[in-house]
Length: 256
Ligand code: PGA
Image 1: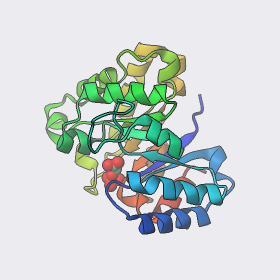
Image 2 (image 1 turned 45 degrees about the vertical axis):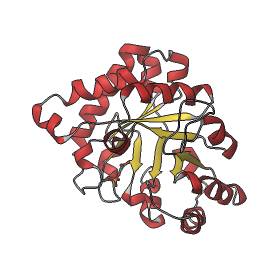
Image 3 (image 1 turned 30 degrees about the vertical axis):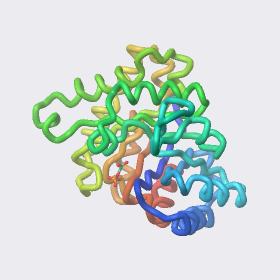
Image 4 (image 1 turned 60 degrees about the horizontal axis):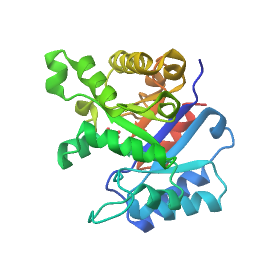
């Protein structure tokens, strides 16, 4: 089964509107017609930058999608500070990251929240990028596979096969995020393979084989090739290296 690669840039809480437009334009200027066949390219800027970034890509007619970094599961209501699926939909968001370890760790996002967000996104036809990953303590305990696969099962609870197919899973070991300490290709492959096996238990091998599993955590132009050469790693969720067009484009071009 050949799955199209994906490179998704997670800009986190970086870039004002002006800076976001400049970065989107810089990526767009380097766009190559070979990209869309080899790789789905997604940028996930802060909410306020979504529309400006989308406008750059639309104006330039490049196949680069935008995604959000979070969403609320209710459609509207008294949820001060939150953003809903219909709001993202109207901007033209194709993807939304959910369950990032920074949201789980700093903002108390639970597996149940991730599941509710995934269901709301699927209902609104926005593809969730569901993040899972273990802390260093869990890795040192030797329970990484159990921990991560439990996160996967919880995120997909009650989601049927036809809809699960639209989701992307991102394996991001917390100890590798923003630390410069990447998982080795073998470590990343071991967990991504276990994630796919869990999806296969839930949905059968055909669906699991069609779903993308990304690796995230200090992916950069120097380590990308070996990571994406692993059979169960279908691309990357990129933090630091997505904040510069030069390095982000190199990651995309590693997929060509
Ligand atoms: P990093 O972040 O590439 O800076 O490690 C990845 C992420 O948190 O999505």
